[in-house]
Image (cartoon, rainbow, N blue to C red):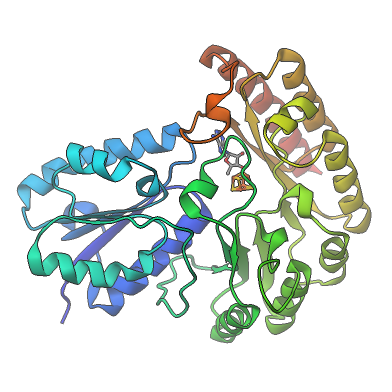
Length: 380
Ligand code: 5AD
Ligand code: SF4
């Protein structure tokens, strides 16, 4: 017997998309069924993001808009989870602004959603289930996969890099790698199902996979084994950090036919002064050398990137260095963002915050340049 229906609203990155598949897996295992629209659902789960202020404002507006549904249906269960709720002070602010919210939980315990839901339904009292700490790894959470041809596979959680602009290490905790045997068992099962053309190994910085495990294994070793186990699928991976991209990985991608040649390699800036202030751990020259090495071994590599314009202190000269680098590397595509101040990060306290008009001018110019490059590359 179906207990009721739910709608999950997902914001942010692929990691969140996959986590929503786990939330759906937990709810369906408990007997709930997915609803087409939030208007028809007895339960609404918002899996949130806070990487930039724009994401956060959009989510807050969406939660606010649920007020009408909550008024119409006093039984409506509203759950807010993920990165946004994990931020300091956010749970209290959500509770105060939106008294119709039933449960708030962060990033470290979404696998316990089923338990919290039972607890809520028993007492019908608001639950704050945001826990601090670095989080652990739970295996065996059911997954209801949404994507048709691609299966996401988590290989690690969290991040240790503390790029000065980024909130991820604060809301997702330190790097934890899943045991290789658990990952490979999942890959094997997905391969056997015959449902997927691609599998994407997911982590904030996949290149540092395995460094925290007792049984040492590199990311190159892991992806080689995954490709062997799933010979009829293409194994993709994201995201790569330029400072940890090893020669062994380049050789592996070049040598193994069913490893994807698409490499997402965020550069963030083309200026050494900005890269240093961002705490990225490489220079413009290191990045150029790395891409040259990649193209030499993998001539059909497709490199995509992320770039931030308007980081505090970024001068016109710094910005022009980014423009020049974009023209030099010829990325297949680039996600370009305006710097967004995130409370609690090192960059939020830096002098020289850039006016919005300047950020806009820079992002528009750079996007124009990249659109032309992407178009030329597609035409090749
Ligand atoms: N402001 C703007 N962009 C950011 N990113 C991360 N943090 C911020 C921020 N505070 C971008 C980076 C990263 C991508 C996922 O989001 O480019 O690679
Ligand atoms: Fe954020 Fe840097 Fe970690 Fe990526 S590598 S999640 S940008 S801190």
